[in-house]
Each structure stands twice: as C-alpha cells, then as structure tokens.
Length: 246
Image (cartoon, rainbow, N blue to C red; front, side, top):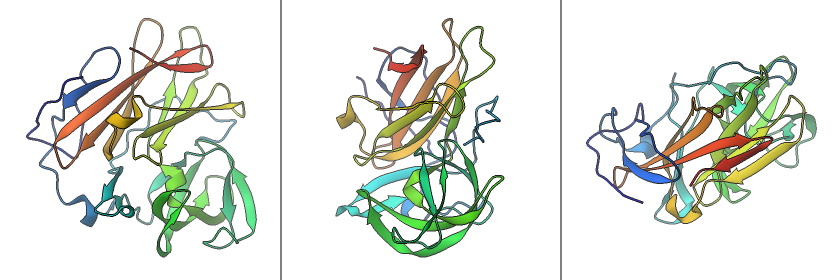
C-alpha cells in the first residue's frame, strides 16, 4: 500500500484504476477546508430499483476529534437534502429519541428528504451524530438518527441482468467504510467493511460504480483531510456476494 500527497481536496476524487486496496492521491479537489465548520446546503423504494449511480454534491465525511468519537466531525444535512437509508429496517420514530414510537421501518436504500435538525449532537451506536426530521419518499414523516443516513447509494449491474444490486455506503464505528447491499428489491441484506479496517481512520468518502468485464465494481475512496492522503477499496459482485479484490 502506497501513500502519496495531494495538493487538492473536497469535491471530486480521482479514482486510480487498480486491483485491491491501495492508497492514492486525492486529485481534482481544492485544499481541504475546516470540515468541522462545513455545512451542506445544497433507498430506493423496493419496487423501484435505481438504474444509475447517485453522485451527490453533498460532502460526506466523518473523522475523530481530539477526544475520538465524543467530539468527532461529521456531515450535517440541510433542509431539502436527499439522503438514503444506510441500515435496513431503520426505525422512523415519532420523536428524536430511541424512546419515540416507531412509525415505520425503512428498508435499505430508501430515499428520505431532510426537513430539519432536532436537538443537539449525541453518541448513539458508537457514533456521534444528530437526529433529523425527515420525510420518507412516498411515505410518512418522522425522525431518524443521522448515522443511518448516507448520500452514497450505488446500483451495481451484472452482465445479463436488468436489475441492480443496490449498495449503500456508510461509516462504521471505526470511521471506515461499511457497505450494505441487497440482491433483489426487498431481498436479504448483506454487510461488509472495507479491509484492512485499520487503514481507514476517517475523512471524506465517495463511492462510484465502474465497469468491468465481469460486471460493475464498487470503488470506495476515503480521503484524510489531516494528511491529504486517500485510501481506496475496490469490490466486485460474485452472485449475491460483494467481494473485495486483492
């Protein structure tokens, strides 16, 4: 694994073709700003799988502060932003609390619209984030905790299939990429972390689908704003499984 410096950041990540897990320079992006001060101003329904990768203009980041998780820096979404559910059967609640009644359970990849923040940042499930009032696409309004939301929903097509396997990428408790995907709308949900886990220490994350002879591959890049270095994982579908290439 090689590390290189970059003179650019936050906007687009240049994907360097290769196999397996590699480090690469972040290119095509201006200098990293203070992400702690950044705001963002600007899942499919089961019966309507997406047919193209969603590449949002939203900056998706999460990295530890001086006290680790307790003062971590994380993306905060604005009214009108479209995000996707990154955890299957996420509880949509009547109040911004785990004590709120469950209105609905949202499937992986379901699209939601941000209606506003609720309360102050808190640590839940080992991650610092904030509650949001949201409206599920084609469904009710309620509250979701921010760590289950992601702008990175990527449909992956295999040769001969018109139905994609839909992957959503979020941050795990160790600040690295976690991918969840389903083989068919409403089907079994699978999960895996990018490896090696210790290579990922937080930062700005992007995910894209790239064509390959055996079907589209999922390419995840995470750029560390403190070092201007990036780490990349490339994964490919084998049947219902998503395998990291080495």
